Image (cartoon, rainbow, N blue to C red; front, side):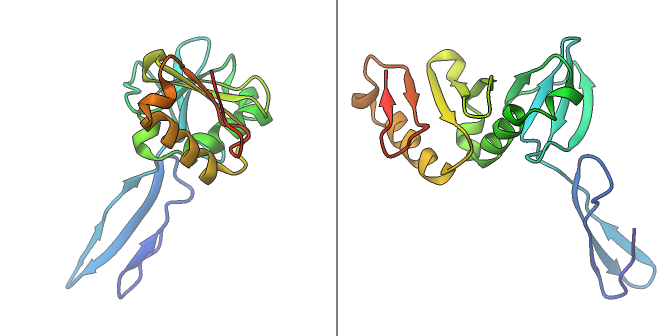
Length: 171
């Protein structure tokens, strides 16, 4: 860590789970440090039930057992170390980190068999969204959000394939 005479920030880059830690000098002999947790893109749940919080780039933040995952998407994997090397998981993390918080909290499950087939289930199975890969996420999110808000467009349908956002398919 470092101390800056006039105040400053220490990014906490080498500490798992720490996003930032701004430092403020309070004369005469005090430092105020506010530690802010890094927001996980998802939790990886391995075959033993251990949950590992990971960032959007696949950096492991921490591992726990029996923690609440409310509001955090969960991806089931056999082995966390191996999964983090797979392009499919990397794409899923990228997609999940791009989602607005209002949509992220609706994610019930995530599957990523290939890097081009990332799929999320929303609202405990009410809707399935096929994202494909992480390209064009701003447009994909806008299209999916609009369709989810349009009850007429989704009447009788539960799946949105937004992988080609210029031509979304509703089934």
